[in-house]
Length: 135
Picture (cartoon, rainbow, N blue to C red):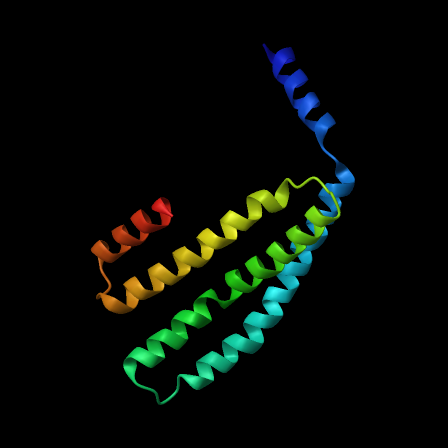
């Protein structure tokens, strides 16, 4: 039984294209660095823009600030994925990373709005867990 499992793992590693995997890792690292830069610059601008505004405008700007990081990383990852697909590379990590980044943006936005809409308590925490798990 163990030998069968090891053979399957060895076959899976044999199908991996480590050059393509390296390119995907490079795209993800560049996406992370780019997202950090965008989050810092645009996030700061959004927070400064929300000072002295009405409640709904402030909530909207703070919500945007919360999802700037995952959305900018998602955008850069999608662009990198398109370039690698155009070059004919096999994709493994980016096929997994793109839906995860989209889910992260959704979770952050919904949980932020939930926290701002309702008073803190065990019910809100339970709904945060349900929403995170569902997304």
